[in-house]
Length: 296
Image 1: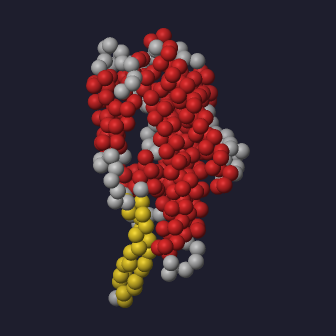
Image 2 (image 1 turned 60 degrees about the vertical axis):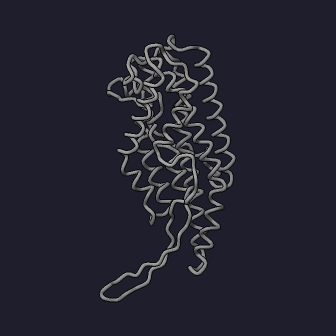
Image 3 (image 1 turned 30 degrees about the vertical axis):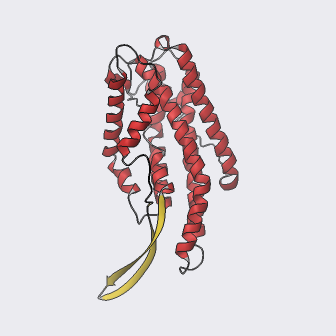
């Protein structure tokens, strides 16, 4: 799935407010405009570049994953890193939005949320496509599809938290706006940081599970994206169970955290289920007549 939680990590957690003043000239008259922009915090991290993060992530996943004899771990690792970096650099729309200093934090969340929801049918189609081209029980794909629903709820809750921050930081006059914004930003990060950390773990767990399945089902390196058929008989049962248990543990833990945090920000998060035609079962029916392209 192509909506990295890291976009919200860098756009919401790794920023600080900076006061600014601009002189505007309108019809020959000068006006002073003051405001707050958000800029990246200057801090030492183990990832100086995006490429470093991608390399670390896939090294961590592939370090303990069994590899078919027809492939080498280096081959697969090189392919995954190259694909991810090229895909990210091609997404100029998201990169530009993250680097937009004058935009509000809520605008960033809305951008990510709306784009994810627009792509949800494609994500469900990918799960349905894998089911139609496999001998794996449908219950497995229902479980992996739960990640899509969970990510949507995660974005919904993140939006509510950021919305509260913007509302509180804009109360009162402009004299203490910088101090108020700094205080409220720290308050916003307190619930957001563990949510984003947990979603990163959940995303890594489902990526590990899917990579294990697709790597062992693919005939070529390029087929890892979308094998012609997923054959459960090719999978080591012990590793398949291990990856499945790890993912199910993370998704349940993620949903428990969402439920707990939502009590303070979005009490109806799990009671207002949106009914859409994007369920796995409906997508399977549609795929009988529509071509589909699957991704991780």
